[in-house]
Image 1 (tube, rainbow, N blue to C red):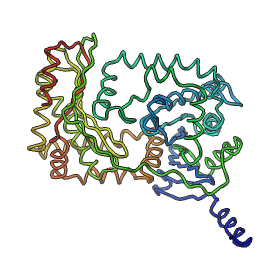
Image 2 (tube, helix red, strand yellow):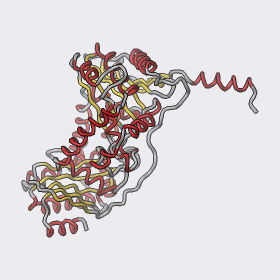
Image 3 (cartoon, rainbow, N blue to C red):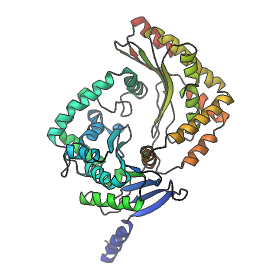
Image 4 (cartoon, helix red, strand yellow):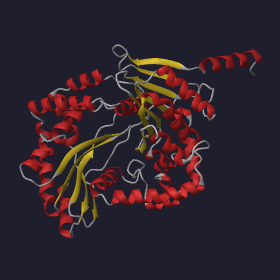
Length: 459
């Protein structure tokens, strides 16, 4: 039995914990590039990066939910919900939402990924309070009405059709399915025609309530922003909606776990009447938290990250077999993918595949030259910095870092990690990743004999 004094002490202790906590995560020079985080009661995090030299600001809210959080019958619900949050709140209609940002020359959008969703607005710094009010209103007070669900269903089905009409895009969904099968990570973010048609307003509302409470959200702002003002405005917006609980709930941490991908030698072919065959050859990669990811980034850049890369030179420049050829990595919390994409004439698929397979095997066995590695480190370093030259990119970096890693890394630290990669590091990760038996996904007008040969290409 608990005494009254013990209960009072526990309540006082809980209330003491339920206060805003502010930390400086990265200290910039003269205040430029300073990143701060405030955790509000109820677990809502607000992270900002200050860049006083610009006249714009990008405000975003990240939700710790993506398509991998869906059951098979809910496939597509996260993306469907993303659309619906623009359809109106108790204070604003869909037109009011878009008109408010258009009226100040701003930009507003959202995107859904496999492990998170982001809603954002980019405006002049003087219009940041408006952006905060509009985006927070959408995230906390969307109505999700039956008529909006029905109307938006047609829009999403058109988006699915548009993706299927672009085989160069669709083949990456096919590759994810080839590697990960009928699992949450292997299913398409958009869902399918059948799953989207089956989703109801009630099911989407339940999904919304389960995944959009403050502990699942990270609020971000980057540009000419004042951290304390952003925190006050966000707090006021959430309190107005009754969405900011005054308890000591802790934010949801980064995803954890370890998932092995076993997809060696799998082949999936999708017959389409296209002018080109679209090919992805690949194998399991690295989880985004793997310490070898810096070496993997250098390897990927040298293999297929630019016009001087091995694959571009061998497939396009020397032989003219494809216009587009590149390699890429996808890192998730517990696994990853490495893939090589090429689009070519159907009659040249086997030649392209042989060259790609030979290059991967050669690099796995012999590694890359020191010159290739040095050039890739320079390219990756430059692209990292150039990719952070606008407030939208900065907002993306701090939001994704908070959600996926639970910490912030300065640009200088990122560059130091890239520069620290050694030829031996790259050769080791090349041996581990490229030495695996690949799997293959192809979309195109393939004949039976070609299909049989494609199975042999990964044997």
